[in-house]
Image 1 (tube, rainbow, N blue to C red):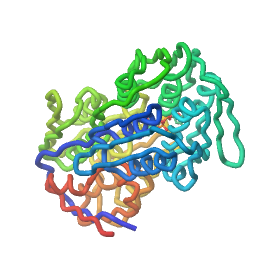
Image 2 (cartoon, rainbow, N blue to C red):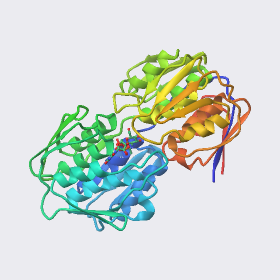
Image 3 (cartoon, rainbow, N blue to C red):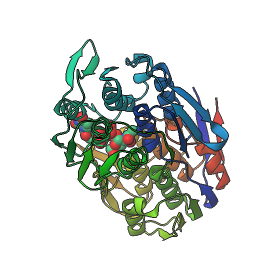
Image 4 (cartoon, protein in one colour):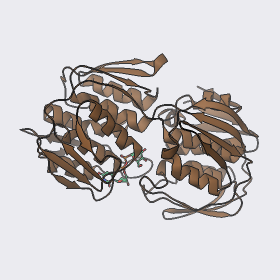
Length: 419
Ligand code: UD1
């Protein structure tokens, strides 16, 4: 198993380019099943999760070519020869369930192993299934699989989501674009990646209005056409580098970002004493490394993203004062805390809250990443820790960060990957 070895770093300095958003790429690849012909997707991040999604659609009979040098993906779903997603691939990545909506809309059938719980919570798919059922699908569950089938074309309807789930909104949206009549998703997720998926579908000829608000209206069309589309920058990757600069101090520029998507993260970092200046597609982050404690509560967008919670826990362990971080999205997302405590952080967990006594002296040691963002949090802590930190199980990190070690090295960090 691979690990990162990280030496304490006094400051980050330099400029890097942020990659395309993983959480846009995954549904967009799934949505490519909705049309025949050759679709081209640009700024696709070269990540293990993206490769898993490509493998999955290949198994379904779709032609996929990933041109890694130019981050371009060419997908041709002229024929879908298989509508059963294999467990070996699905269990690697929960986002595989995003194939349910497009397969149902295009072929009237999908069989997908139920994604189990994971390191951050139980993560059911009940809202996805309720939505697909409301569109007319029959749902059968058994032997660990979910079967969704529709004898005739799906029919548009009004769907109210009990919670603005990102994945459920995306699955329902992908199924509804080819349904008969109008579908209205109320209490929809408003995340930028949902908007990106909607924009992609619109570029394929779908009629979707209101993405980015809590009500999405979809008028079904008979057919979609292939398209060329560029994925938005990854706001969580950008936020992670901002958090890294906050903790060490330094002065960096992140290119290829949408500053608006980072508003909740920028607001909290500014409150903690970090300077952030925004241009149209770049952000400059300046930090003295002297930070104030701030309280954070995760919320659906435009609230503070749960995917930045772990990284901010590391940052707050070095801030002056006591901070409280409340996780409202996932029930078990403090797995990084035990490892941070081993590095010297003073953190108390009470239910869904973490109370962090700041100004802890962090010390390098061996730690294990339990999930993607927990891994990022440990790398950030390693930058500020005295001596050397070894972060193990970095396959989790590779799922969501393109060449994080190379990018950190470009900013002056001594970090090495050991296979
Ligand atoms: C997506 C992101 C993930 C991010 C999360 C929240 C992708 C590939 N992943 O995950 O990085 O952390 O949004 O911003 O885009 N829930 C249910 N029933 C459902 C669906 C969800 O109870 O049918 C619950 C989940 O257990 C969780 C909450 O709703 O507690 C939010 O989940 P959701 O927004 O669906 O997250 P994902 O789409 O899985």
